[in-house]
Image (cartoon, rainbow, N blue to C red):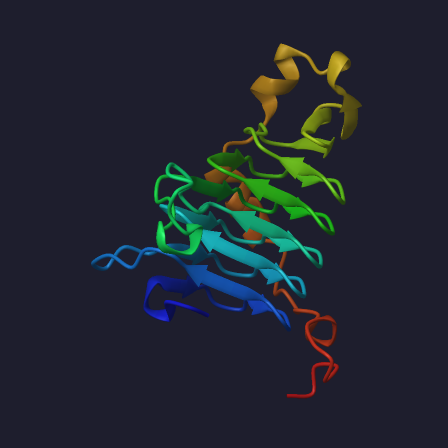
Length: 196
């Protein structure tokens, strides 16, 4: 963790082996990386914060994901890039109970809604609405969850009534909290097989 004072990790959350949490701009008491409770961050994930990276509760990431909210400033190629600094304006938000598949890259200002599933290897460069399944480069919404039908449906079959029936993030979080205790799979977080 670079800039640990500007990072918050919620209760019962796991940051797996070889992850890198990098706070580029350390200002006042502003949190730059905020990971909620009951989150599991897979191995070798990389966080590079611009304005902020925020994960709500119950987020699950697989291995090798990247959350790139900052980049090097390249306005003047007559200067060494290493000396030009990094950007500080992008905000990445990942909603309650989102699942980010292996090797996903999230770049720039992006909001991934609650209940989303992002397929392995995807590149997310734009917002994804709640209860979406998206994949590809760039990630495109392919399915949405229908409460009334109790299943994921192709985007062309998702109706205005389906949209209206979706819970908001707070109600969804309240429902998830009634699921009982979460037993984190520590064995998956490191080479020591959870025996630390």
